[in-house]
Length: 218
Image (cartoon, rainbow, N blue to C red; front, side):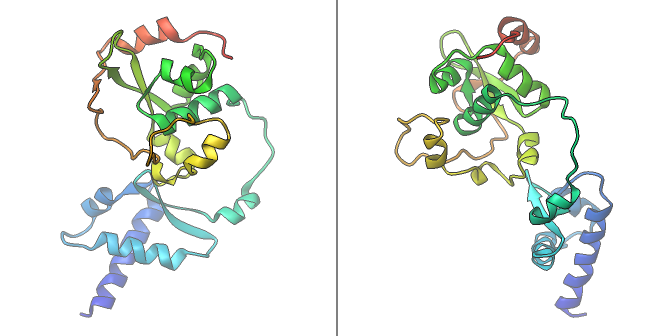
């Protein structure tokens, strides 16, 4: 049996799994469902090339693969509807700062924005699942640190944080500090804690909500 035929057969299997899946699948998810030694990464690359330029594309988002409508055709699926929850400008600015500075504390967010960040913006981002509490900084006061989630990557169709807009664009918008160190680049997703972070305690989440999440925002 030729290699071309083997890869083609594997492509069909991967295609079928991705089509039937209710959620995006990771490389590990696919490998668990296929024979040992299957070159799943090769099949995914071949499928992505095969679907490029078509009405449906195969894309990787937050480390998982899925079929989705081609971006230039998204208008066909758009309909006007009432949006029950809007992200305020303050929340958008806060989200951008967290994305580029993570792990970041509330005080550091305020320093970048130049205004006091009350709980409202963080509350909305946490409720929407775009931001999470990561740990506690090993500094006086043990402040909570924040970072983005996989839901953030999925919402903005980013394969990883390296696909964020360039630092120069964000600095021009005032969403990044102007005194960034030389060689600054968007951070890479982190599975664990940073060197200067400790894990959250069991009671940290409710304590934070009570102490810092307020009703207003700038």
